[in-house]
Length: 405
Image 1 (cartoon, rainbow, N blue to C red):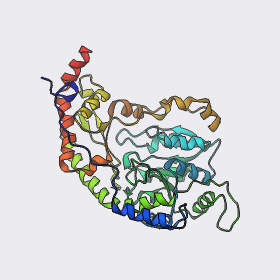
Image 2: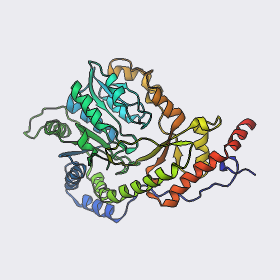
Image 3: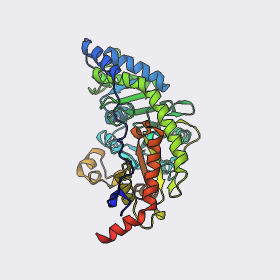
């Protein structure tokens, strides 16, 4: 009789993952306030309250709420005057919105390789990719785990570049004891439905730069600055009062959720250390708080007797555990070679960059466990580990099944 669920056996886990999103009476209370207010737009009292509270939470002076996390990056670029003919260095191991926001602003993305020990953008690779057209480096804190930010700051300082933090997945992360937004010139956060702080869709811009804040504020107010002068091309991309209402309630729940993810993440670290076919990722010693939007680790494909990463994780999912292989390099998507992209940025994007580490982790190593799983109990973490072990110990069934197809 087969043992693996993928081959007809009984799944190890039948329990459902913790529900996401999590909401309750506080969301209803804040939404009632929004419905009763005189304005539902971006300048309502709940929007202002959230911006003030989230700025304090993030250890920065200025917070702006916008329509989504793609718009937030585009607004940052516009406020800095970064556009057509300019380049921004970014990782290829990211969600496409990190790249599409650059393209829609007319900026050419230049891909630099990741550090294979962390899955994060390598400062050394980013520095090698600098050209006279480079205006900024934008590390993406994949999974909520910022890495080597001091080195990125040094590189940007020495080359006169802007450091943009794409913290779409890193709300609540802390680096060197401070909110991660305090470690870059400006930071973008996403509040899309899967994110750890969510209102269904939305974005946040955080900065300590007063002049930049003035320019962003003018753009968001139809191009008119605080003195009533039209100094910018405006964009009506602010967040609604209803979204801000939900975010206020979600922010109140966030600290306890961060604590739970940290606890379960540490437990998973210890348990996965028992498996010799799993590789733990290195974390920066200055990382005070990992936001754990994803729990990421590496699978040693060379130990699987010929099984691929995809085959192995498909069998893990059949056991009832939500494990995924993660991103593929953005430059491999057909849309990146389109004529429209060339028109936007003025030239072809390098679709064959020297990024061997990103290629390796994308196709042969990277494993993800979703953030909502880490809101569960210790036995849920045990199920993740036991499912990995079960599939590994019975991998011969998968190999035999491959022969019979």
